[in-house]
Image (cartoon, rainbow, N blue to C red; front, side, top):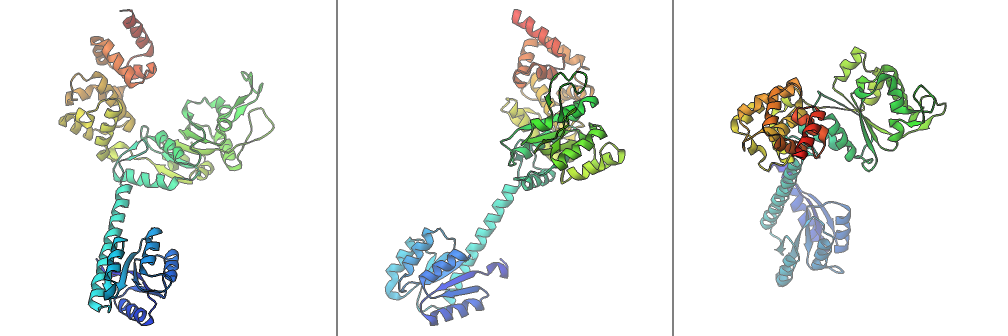
Length: 452
């Protein structure tokens, strides 16, 4: 413990001016910061307006004696330690003070060496308390999970710290990173921790919007504004009014639409296609792209003015290969999420080593899909290293390029289909994707199973 860490802020409460002067001089010589008052009432007022580490209080004082003062301090749950100064005839009162929560007592006349020993003990105690608080804060900051985001690596700790700073704010956020890194998951986490968490959240992939319909999709249209506009339609901005809109793959939007998006952000007004009047909208915007935004501006697929307007806070999500230490955590999480209690023990040592060495071009999404398929197709209680190449090949080549999958399916169709449906929570499209077959094939097989 350094010299500065030993220093205390001390309050002396005594109606005797000579005692006050002696204690103040002795404690100041030791390097402590000392304040003095002459009554218990003044002492209590001082504690209510300032932070003190230690109070040295006389037992016998008019109006409010030492015991009454101690009761008032403890009743208000003030953090300062209290030491009672007492005469020899008041030992019983001193013992009573200890029962009431006093740190210690010291007898008159106060001896310098005893005072030094007592203050040093208080300083040591306060130092350890501060260290314990700092340790708990450090532990609380070191997380392996933030909402549904998993990872304990340094890159993820930095992400969690940034997400903490965004709590309670409604400013625009730009998220970028490779496909499969969890951009929508981060966007949803930001929304859940925001003042708009009870309002609507809409996520849309801009890459799925047809260019000619992009303006209508975002801002809506009125009946008759173009061929096929048979009735008025709300756009995403109007539908999300008061809530949060997440636009994924922003660079897929045409530049002309990006210009109108910028206007909607800056003026908080939109105009439907074919309409003459403007509509006020209040939307918190979170956007994402798998492109480096600076490079996207240079390529001409992201408007510079829109980028600057959106780039209030930018979050770069690391690819899984840059945080390999999180792979075990993710495997354990996804295995348990899909109903296998074994967690990480579901994998053999050799299989784990192979998974840690893999570069994961599809990032966390690829890892999750791999776990789901292994749960369906693995026949043993543990995944062996020889079980992995098939599924790596599936991930890279796509769900339909796997005759081996079809063979495995034929061998035990009903069992595998039920596993897939359970993991997909009854969603037949998801189950078909997990099995690596067309949805129509799955429907036919389900019909056949029901007839058997």
